[in-house]
Amino acid sequence: MSFDDEFDLEHLLFRERRCTSCNKVKDILNDFYLSRKDRKGLPSAYSYECKSCTIKRIKINRKKMRKIHEWEYPDW
Image (cartoon, rainbow, N blue to C red; front, side, top):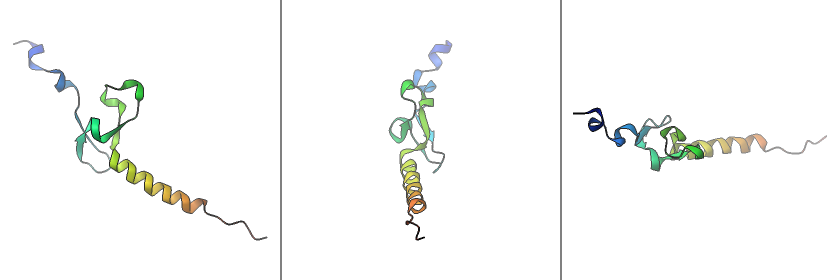
C-alpha cells in the first residue's frame, strides 16, 4: 500500500470549521464568508466567524455607534 492510496484529496481540504463566537462546527463553504478573494480554494481564505455571528456582531455595533453619534447642536 502506497502513501498516495491512504490519503484522498478530501482529507487534506478542510470542509468544516469551528466558529470562534458560537463554538459550533459548520460547513466552511456555506457558513463562512470568503475574506480573501484571491485565494478562493484555500481554507485560510475564509473567516473564522460564521455568517450568522458576523451579522449579529455588526447589528450590535451599529446600534452602539448610532447612540454615540446622536448629538444635538450645542445651545450657547
